[in-house]
Length: 223
Image 1: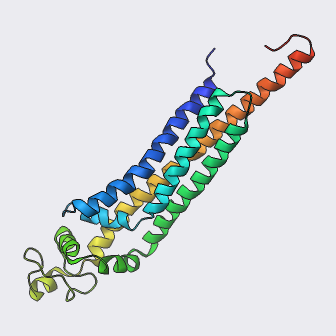
Image 2: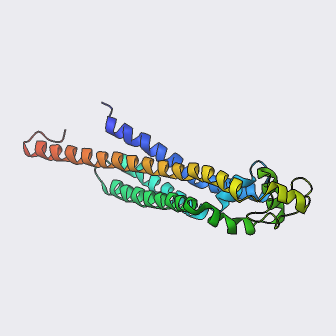
Image 3: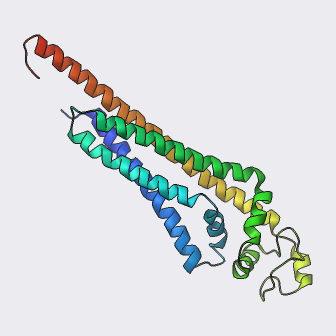
């Protein structure tokens, strides 16, 4: 008879592993995009993601991969629950780190304009030019401090007419980062469900072990 508890556990383990892949691929993809193929369409998301805790996400991916590997001997060895317990602690650690990343991004959206100012000033001129073209603005909070280009901000009068980028860039950042931190909170939900599934497997195996010992004491042998 198929153990439905075990099937649920395997299903959530696959979801947990998929989250680990995303934790690794998204930072690597973002860093590669920033270095090789920034353009007007993707420059704003790339700049924002580059200032998210990408290194923490990659470290978390490694922890999640190791935790997933612990599930293999846990599934094979049904009598030793040590692997399952270690697996549960790995999930707890991963969930805490994922929650921390999501909260850090969320806190950054509480003062978007203030937090985006240093992000803007540290960008090279070619990136600032693309941001100005993307949001049809010049400079950040002061249109007089703009990057001169041939498309959007060729002179001071055009810059004064378009105004600064603080409001349109901040509005985009809020909407984009809302999706990002909500995604991380979704990862935490999957972590919690995987943890609950693993704990159900532990409980199920404890019960089976207890009944096996009772049967052996009654002389029925191991069933």
